[in-house]
Image (cartoon, rainbow, N blue to C red; front, side):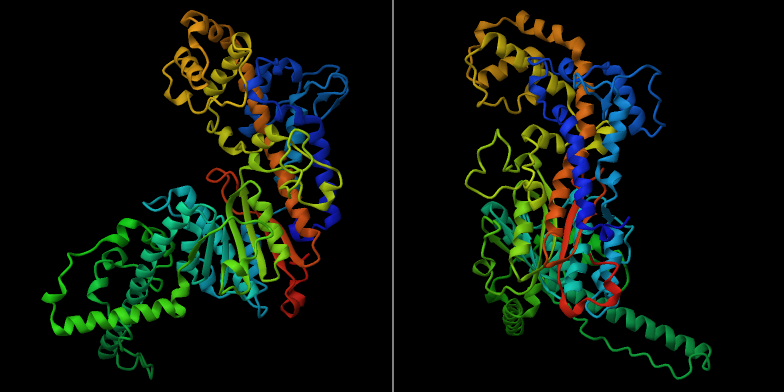
Length: 602
């Protein structure tokens, strides 16, 4: 089912199903691993063996076919939990329900290809978007380079194409990148798609680094444009020579066709020659996979290469005049339209109330985007999109759900006098819905990665849980406000770990001998399987909690009369980028909407 055919009432029914499921199962996701032994978490919530849980989860993730539960007279259950004891008694029922209440199981998401197809089929003129707004080699992916790792390359390429299509669909040239960080997405959007991008980040360190990259990109952009002209001229000259040779061999074969051999604009300055080896044999006209060039071109090493400086006094009069002319042209270029192809980093803390025109003097209608915006910044981006008439479309990928503020969480106080990040929709706010911080922490777990044996450091979690037992037994004055931090990576053994932790917590480590510390480890080690199985249950529930947070954002978008398109789109490969879902929205476009849009728009 396409997300476009999902009405607001249909979406609310699905959200109701997820909240009902989590009302029964959230106790597991909300249990903190630190308290695993001090509060006997396994016995409180689970009535099956760790081996049974691990076997069922492994069979499910391995797609080997789900084993049937043993024949018995089961107690009355809801989603696998006993209705009398509220303990898990049927792991298979829980796994089935968890899959059904995750985003893939609910059938609410679009694929990236569906979104691109819809956007390109409903451009401003009702026709397909031009070729330059999308890649001709959608299957090609950049492995890794010196500028970005494979994860970031995958994210930037996938998201930038969607953003470019949104800009084309809405007929805008500006993009506002909220939480732009180091400017990877902004740089790629400006250089690859020719969009004017304003990257806004609250960290001055990030924007300073982005500004430096901005300076280098301006230089590279001109080199690349000149190289492209030269490459086209060489291609035309080669074609002309080929035609002439063919005419000599067979004068009647060509007819009246005329091929121009003029070399238009193929001149490259001496200053730019040092960059050309990087660009050799690659141009948009000769190689469709130019995204690798754009990404690798952002490498500092590529752009910073310089030749020895020659003192002005040793230059000829002609060379001095040439350099003076180039400097004047460069300044004019920076002031002119061509400078718009490089993004502008800005430092500001952004909320839904931020007045964009105070930050951006040249603000026009724009697309607002955010790639892995942390915590409340993702819902703030959606609120901003709805509130600002100059924002025509939005593409927002959130992350760090544990940093979200919750309006109705009784354990939280931060939302008493401020706007909170969850819930966002009127529908969930009317129900005073909340998850809790531990559950939101669980939502950050990556099911796909954990299924392949990645993502959970079980021994470090075990060490921390046993340390909590020691603190309970011997340090009753310990206050949980102090955090242990990253001690495990430095510790050589459990004893060393405990002593490092006690020193960091400013507690008297002389109270305990090494033998006493080791005895705690040996006592709890046989129960480590319980912790392993419990963490797998939390991982199983993670997509459902993440799904509720994202469905709330989608519901918020569908509640807005000004929004004509609202969709939840899987942009990334979850193995490469676990936070792979984007909330996409487009405002009413008036006369732009034609009859061909009826199926696409909600």
